[in-house]
Length: 113
Image 1 (cartoon, rainbow, N blue to C red):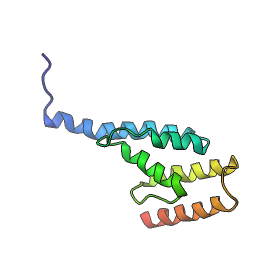
Image 2: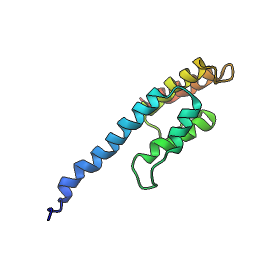
Image 3: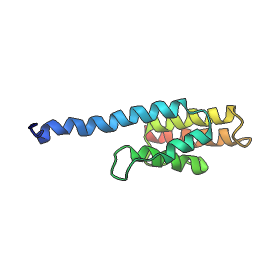
């Protein structure tokens, strides 16, 4: 019978799992080329108590009207900036929307320092 892990042994796993989830989520979002795929990723949320769920929730919030979620971290915001540029290059945005979203993201970047 396997020995049960101590709290000290489980602690690094609690930190590592969200990091592993983030890396997977980040790589998928980084490769996303259009709004349909981004929305599919956002809607592929894990259960409520899963640490990675917040990344999906933040992305969904961003995709609704391109506002920056307050709960998003700097790396997420950087990915949103890249994403909005890909959407614009694909012709998926109204004229002027890219500049508007870039300005909003820049304000959030400046406020985070």
